[in-house]
Length: 119
Image (cartoon, rainbow, N blue to C red; front, side):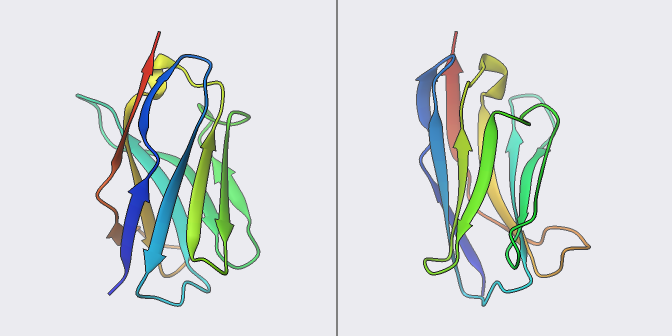
């Protein structure tokens, strides 16, 4: 059973940085796509970034492009989200997610980690 555990959230001032981590277990992950999503209060969950485990191809939401970087560590089964130049509108619960094929819906989710950006 695939398990995803996020960490690294917290409170930061606007313009600051945070790095989120996602520890993945219970799968081989080769061929998986790993993603970060977020949900702000009163809003729907939205896509933030994705990385293909094999090859490392990445994609980003327009709202975070140039500020956030997704990466993975194959040896440690870890996925990271480096967030720079944070804005108050980045405040949300951030979720790590996985899917066993690049095409399709995300089927595995972590419990989320809170990111709060103060102005």
